[in-house]
Image 1 (cartoon, rainbow, N blue to C red):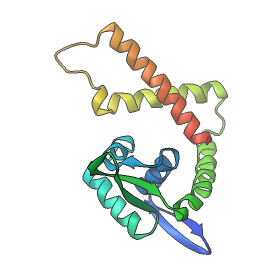
Image 2 (image 1 turned 180 degrees about the vertical axis):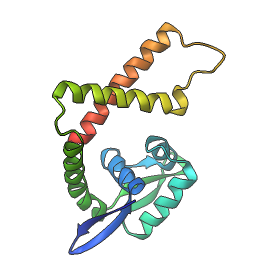
Image 3 (image 1 turned 30 degrees about the horizontal axis):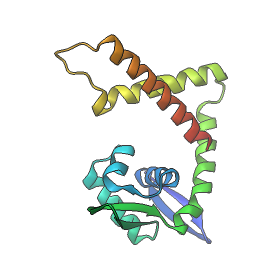
Image 4 (image 1 turned 135 degrees about the vertical axis):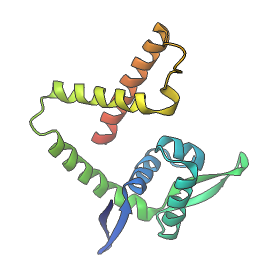
Length: 158
């Protein structure tokens, strides 16, 4: 799905993945491509193709990591940073429409449930089939879910 954003009297089309990339970079400029791929839940090669298109569109730029000659860091350009405000405004409207009629308590429960689902589906959180999770790992996963829920809530309000 592509979204349109106005920039200097012309529309820019971006995919949902590209929007997530810009949103993540706006909070953490200079991530390596590998770290960025993990944070936006994309395969590294898929992210690389998105970044290639975004570089061509003037939305991001790559720079060599001064600590690792093999790694490239990704930064937003001024053009991308101009789109962040409209992106967040649109996200806020959609978020409010989606939660219309829900009390603050139900919204909090929803965020926690969604964070649990994301955690359950993430590759690094899946327990092996041969062993049941221990109480300490259950506690750690609950804390991770709580932190992700807070992060999701903060991202939508930022």
